[in-house]
Image 1 (spheres, rainbow, N blue to C red):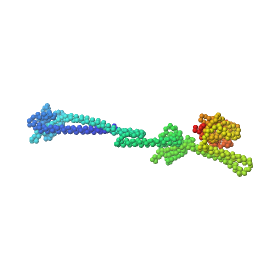
Image 2: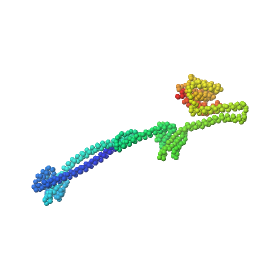
Image 3: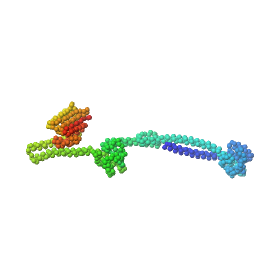
Image 4: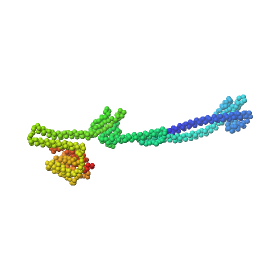
Length: 584
């Protein structure tokens, strides 16, 4: 811009000065010619009044010669017949008749005549001024012609033109320098403002341009500064909101995908990548969702996306064969046009599994409760309807009713314990420092009758006293269930072995029996509620089907782990590993 402006102004000024110079030259030339003509006419008047009359009367040309020499003018006196009677220049010889010269012709007519023409005598351009001299009878008695070479004027004119050209060139150079100086001075703020605006356009907001001016450039700079501040504040606020939105989307458990109207991915959070199993380092922004994920689920999604009649939609679908999603679709509208969709994935697999577990639990509880209740009700109705009075029969019926009532009580008790463990991690959790060998011996005393009934020997192996920070009731519940199961499912006259050991930060408890064992296909399911390996045998032993589920919940609630190893016909071993202290 600066170069174009400087060049344009320089050209305009140069052309203007050149035109002025040309006009001045032409005017000066014309003025110079006019002044020369006037001088010649003044000389003519002087000669006509003072010198020519004396020459015509006496023929004395001395005064004429002196005047011609002093003025460097060529003077010629011609009679009315056109003959030359006087010539100031010597050595021209006899001159031809001048009666046909244009200036002489005009003078003979009584007019002072000026003529510029080529002189055959001097072979040069000359200016002639012919003045008639009138006699007493007002007739032309003689003609005074004064001549001057035009080149004599051209020399002076040429010198003047040189001076004009020098002045023009000097003026052009000075003007160009001044133009560049003033343009630089005036445009420098604009250049700084332009650089400042480019920096703003490149994203460097918040900068300020320091310039104190009270003109329009100053107003422009102030406007740019205000724009920079506002853009910086706006983008800072927008970046903060984007960061907050990104953080929210990144930490959401739900998958979120934003797509445009051509199904190109605009945004994809980490949860959505996990749901669709898209690698975290794979660049998917801008790609079509069909090119990124090609499972059958996406075709079902596309069918819903093509439905433009509903602003919000939701459906459930299965993905990866074992995962259930609830999908929410919201339209992105702008100016009543659908520009894309927001797709939200909610993984409800766990919820579905929990619902199934609840249904199974309700069904199992109903079944488990129904059996003893039906038995009790049946025997009572039998006694009432048949009015049984036989003591032995009544004793047998009452014994069965008592056993079923006891089984019902234990079932309800186990359900309540399991519910408490699932909801709050057990009872009122008061942690104590337990001496495990002492606790196990007390549990042996509790189960002594059961063990003696099967002639089972309870053996504790513990190299030294081991301490464990644990809830006493939970520990006893866990060990009673394990040891009681070991007694029930062991062959008569066998041993149930409990081994206590400790590692650096954990306590290991092993309960081993030499009973029937657990088939390999059932090992992974024995901790499920109401699951029995052998239902008939389990009911004969009086089990509720919840004992191992309670054990598993107690271990998990205390950040432990339990491992089962079993071989059919050889026995089963449960190994529990618990942290020594609750804060570990």
